[in-house]
Image 1: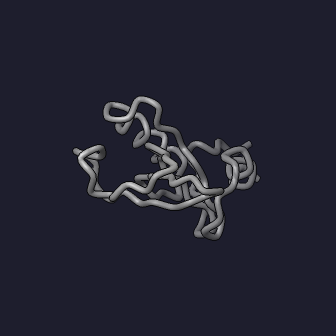
Image 2: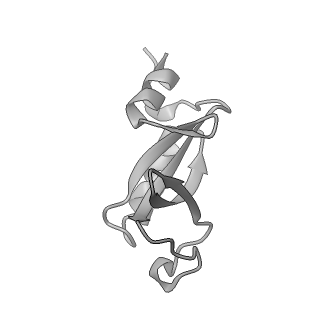
Length: 97
């Protein structure tokens, strides 16, 4: 059986680290994000979500998430399939099959 932590998901699954969310839009260059680069913002159900990282390999994003937790202790991994937010469980199930 394959170990999904080492598997590359291919081009349709991407993993990112969510560092914050807010009902109010914040600039990605806000002082709130000081020390973090390449922040992306997207909106879901009226909530702005802020992410960093963009990996196809789950093991790599896990390592990056731990690094980001030094700045944002509540950071966690999220997943996208073909640009659409999906549950992490769905993403891991797909790359494990």
